[in-house]
Image (cartoon, rainbow, N blue to C red; front, side):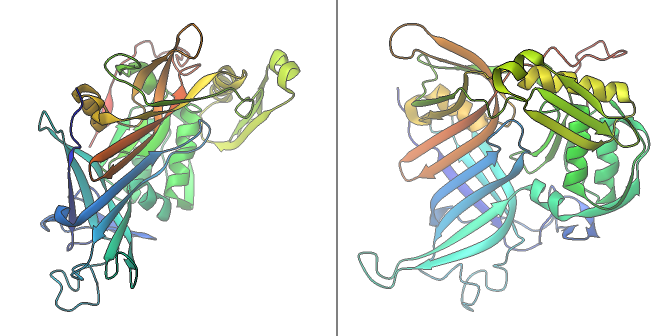
Length: 409
């Protein structure tokens, strides 16, 4: 049975400035200030909301996760969001750099879920001086999450040798970013000296050194910085099967391409020798397709050699894969629940029957989430990452269990 559109609630913290997690007394860092006022309150602007669009994640396996963005269009016919209007209710406080969060309340269960939180980067304004909608005015709020802030900050320090999670913590401690969830890591990193280094670049290098496209850094929908290590995908619980039964799909996009094929891998750690790995069958089929990376921070060349094997296993063959699925969450209450709860790197199964006979069923990890809310309409899209080569191949000597240990903050 179909259900209604979720009730959307948008709140803006007009005072208090940007913060990390509403509680951090962050240090002033080049490009970023984490000094937010946790006592400042949010203002509900839901009555003026015309549409909400949220886009998080990435579109391809070998890309890095981007900062999650949110676009909220507000009615502005009373100039209530005009920063120059002295009689406006928030005059003097309509500025970029304020916090914004978005909630969705399930139409049947009444459960309210935070679906986005970030910092407003810009206010855009539109005015219709003529035509059918003459006199209509809008204010469009554009926000991005914690990954954007990490990309604007620089730091200098020397980390101690240790597991990858501790390296991530050492970097984040330098900018006092405390709203984070950091996996312990299974690979050892060398002591590394950083001088005026971009924070996000350093975090991505550590993740790459932990495992290509299996370890990663991203911003959660709660605006928390997440580091997941090389075995993080091993511990994911399947959130459901999307197909012709209870979780219907409105559109499936598949791809069978050679763009992601990588059959000649060359990785080098700082202070180490280049480690290479190739697959002759793949080279015969597709020609030489190289993937190289230097400046990794692994402790040993043997560890780097293992990374080349992992990357080759993932990318040596072209694969018919489900790239995207489109969903209409109003189709039923269960689908609505699943979509509102969806997070980056969730594991799911997609099933569908193409024209003719047979059924395609594949397990995938979510790498992109797109949600669009408008009056009486809610559509969602998921970009997917093949499971091939990403689970079952990350064991290392001395690490025998698949635990879920996190260093939580």
